[in-house]
Each structure stands twice: as C-alpha cells, then as structure tokens.
Image (cartoon, rainbow, N blue to C red; front, side, top):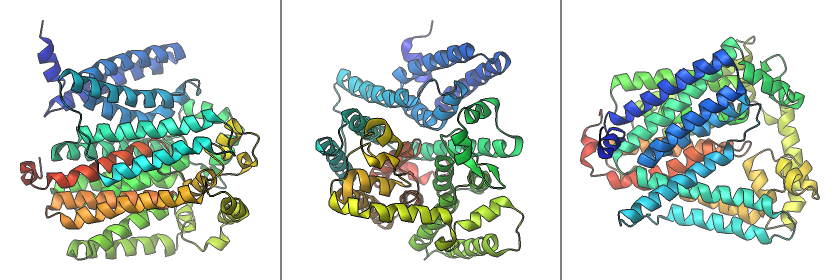
Length: 491
C-alpha cells in the first residue's frame, strides 16, 4: 500500500501531476457521460454527479488548488448541468459553498501547520472591502423591506472576496499565473466550441427540453430570421456572448506576447472559434467589447511596431465586416447592428426611455431603493415596490436604482482604481511577459466594464469568478519582476 504522503505527492499540482489529475477527471467524466447517454436516466445522472463530486471532494481536501480550478470549471458548466435535470437542482449555491469550503480548508491547514495566513492589503482589496461595507449598510435602507433579498446578494459578495483571497494564495509564482491563463482560455475555448456545435448541429435534447419548458425563454432568445441565439453551457446568450468577448480580447493580446510560434498559432485558432461562438450568441454588446478591448491594448502599446501592424489589420478587418457587400449572412448583419447609429435601434430606444423615466427616482434616492428591488429579484423579494416591473437592462442601471448614485460613483471609482494599477504596473514593469499579462488583464477588464453598461458582465457567473481571479493577478504579478522563472518564457 502506498503511503499517504506518496499519494498526496502524486496528486500535487506541480509539473506533470496536474495533468494526470485532469486526465483522470476527464476520463471519469467521459465514461459517466457515455453511461448517461445510454441510460438517459435522471437517477443515473444524479448518481454519476454524486460519484464525480465525491472524487473531486477528496482531491480538494488533498490540494485546494484542484478545488480552485474545479470551482472555475463549475462556474462555466453549472447551468448546463442544471438543464440536464430540468433546472430541478440549482448549482449556484453549491458552487458558492465550495468556495467557502476551500477557504475553510486553507485556513484550517494554515492553523494546523502553525503558518500565518497572509493577505496583501493592497488598495484594490481595501476598496473592495469598502464596497462590501456599503452593500452591508444597504440593509438599513428604509425603502426595501426584504432582509433575505439583501442577504442573497451580500453573502455572494463576501464569497467572492474569499475567492479573491484564495486566488492570491494560490497564484504564488509566475508558473502558476501561466497555468491560470492557459486554464481559463482553455475552458473559454471549450465553451465557445460547444456554442458552435449548437449552431452547426443543433441543440441537445436537454437544451431543447429546457427551452420548451417556458415559451418566454424562446421569445427572449429568438431573433427574427436568425433562429435561437446560442448559449453553450451558460445561463443565457448575453452571458455567453460577453464572456466569450472578454476571453477573446485576452487571447488576441497574448498573441502579441513573448511566446513561441506554436503557442501563438494555437491561440489564434482558439480565438477564431471563440469569435464564432460569440457571434452565434447574437449579443451585440460583445462586439463593442472586443473593439474597446483591442483599442485599449493598441493605446497602451502603440510604441511597438507589432502593435501598429495589429492596429492597421484590426481597422481593415473591422471595415470589411461593416462595409463589405455581404447582406445575406445573418451573423455579419447582427454584428453590424452593434455599430450603427443608436437612434435606428428600437431596443436601444427602449433602454434609453427606461433610464430617462427613472432619473427622478435616482435623484431623490441617493442610496437607492435597496438590494434586490429591481427586475425579477424585486418581484421575488420586494413585490410591493414598482421597481420589480422595471427591466434592469445593465449592471450600472441596476446599481443606480438599488444602491443609488452614491453606490454608482463608488462602482466607477473602484473600476478606475483597478485600471489605474493595471496601467501603472504595466509601465513600471521591465519584463515583457509580465507586461503582456498586464496588457491582457487591462483590455479584458476594460471590455467587461464597458459591457456592464448594457449587460451584467462583472456580476454574473462565471465572469465574476474570472474577474476576481484577474484582480489577484494584478496584485501578484508585479511581485514576480525578478523571479528566476521569467527567463524560461517557453516553459
């Protein structure tokens, strides 16, 4: 019998061990998927999920880094798994509880080893705590009467802070940062590929079953003459499209990094599939996000000849997509509508009308109406308020109504603080690999912030998990400036 220490060493996330763990999990998942496909039984699926969950739980106890990446993967897959069960099982709460479990294991292991748990009190972390404190004070908002509605959002914000602390602990050297980016771009590529499969081969039986359970869903997801917008594993086409957009921005930036040709070609192929998947979502905000992210990268690195070539190529491609005499392609036509004059866009007119209608309310309520008072959340937790009938449209509009213009100003200040440190560390660094990571993070975050005008790009899962992981990268990367591993760029 091998000793516990040997088993633990074989499962560690160092060198080839991490790939062995992933290979085992993929094999187990593939076998279970085959059994599920043959039986088509919900009971069989439930048993398979429990078995796989048990295996993952044992691995997490041994190494919380496995749990960290499992949580990231589950953030992409939980909605798709829920659809298999006709949404009878909501996996959002288990995902958040998994993060709490990871944090608890980390603290417990530190206590057993008598190691102090160190958290770098960076201004980004302090500002995030201020934001959480403001949300905590919203419990005293006299307009909203629902404590459960406030608690559902507040505790989720606390869990994200715990996730940030875990990421800060795990992303402890440049090699782990590299692996993190490989992992997230890999799972973004897989998610995009499944969206393409939905477009090319059609929806799976579980997807169709879920769509047919509520005619309103088909109405929301359908476009005239274009069929149903694709959503891959995620909750809806908007979430899918914006997630693919921010991921695509990161891939495009890293293609200009100090990496070998094989990696650049691989990133290019992944970027093509990701762009197609994003296009099939029919999310016009995603198109604007890509343009904004690429423009930020160009502005940051315009002094480089390669960037000047990228800028010219980007303008040519964008001009072709907007003005080429191609009128029978629904995907290209949908792409063009994101850049036309907004006054010709009926949906934009509706959004603008809603925001103008609510401006007097915002002016009269500097602290907003309280948490979970707008849209579907408002109908569930605060049905006595008229705000439940107001569509939130985007994250900023939702924040302005629920947390007031004070909360909105804090949100903008937090975003500016984050982007400031991204740009500051980018120009401060003298290492090309660290600089390209900071450039990618800056472009991705800027695209997310812009997308939040019309969508929920930062607060929805899995984008929220990626977002807080990127914050950890911002805080940690500049500390690796003199790391010896940086000389091995192709490792």
